Length: 492
Image (cartoon, rainbow, N blue to C red):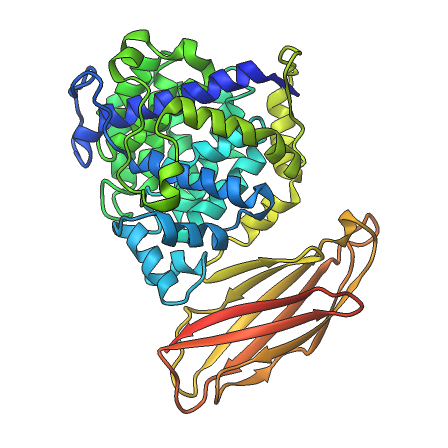
């Protein structure tokens, strides 16, 4: 597939303008549980309201610029959280507190976090979609790494994968229904997000009116989270606006905001998605002129490096566009941004996107690894997926069970099995009860799929434990210079 670079840039710009419009229009009603009846802005002309939905994405922009597209993991983004993002609201604060206690992301999003099913992650997916246009499998992976920092393995992370994939697909598909169906193919069918989105599609197909559909959604998810701030219903309200709006920007946004609950998030996501679908031509001229181009922040530490972050949608667009070609290459995406040639989107683009989602090994591994109390590390030769059987707590003489899947990556370079020597570096008094000291990882090829090396360990604490106990597994690759150190923190 090909996108003309000017077409792509126009869509990115419309994404941020639409995000600002929806966030500003919806913010005054945030947290309202009953149906609303709004018709437009209640803010003053030119008054852009600050919105963390957009703020955080400028930090991810900086992470991409500084670290590149190959190194975007939950652990890396967690460090940027601690350096640049100021709020301690709900899951934001819990994720930061857990990281400061020594729990690396994504474990930081799981531990003692009753906000895992909330809205803080799916509202910040546009950056990932915009740097991976037409590559929903890549957008979903990036969005999940982002979300796991403060949502762990919760519905909030699943919601981020859905929205990121939907928005990436919107760069190449002509209608929002196709984008939604592509995004549904990313996430688990059992998830409440998937169930809620499918309910909206069925309600629309059956002719149910928007108000009845909205009330049914709110009721079906009444048992989740803290009422108005949970992801399944609010993602469904966003989809309701997009589907029932029938391609009309104003109608779509007002329908979503009128559902109530997290209105700045639903409005902003509708605006961004409609902007990607239709470009600047889809943005109503009066609303665009009413708000302008500025970005006003509320959640970023603006000192030092933060001063260089964008102050306008135009500047943000320019910096995002510079990153896209390299990010697509890094993700082996079947998409080219062409400076001269027109768009080339085949008629079966939807089927092609869904096939890439099914066949993307990295996405499927990320979905399979979406488990509580997990960690991820990578070397040029292999990946390591770590899962604790229980929460990372330890008491004197207690045992901790640790499972690790080592996945061979050398099939990308040469067909070669790997032999790893494993050694634990433990706090005083801790010892290994059971586990291997060496493991073999076969290469992945057409004849053998046994490219996993599985290792299970049981570690016992001594008679005393510290408030923070750091365990490190050393993995030495025989015949190679690569050594991986896997840190695992247990709280006493």
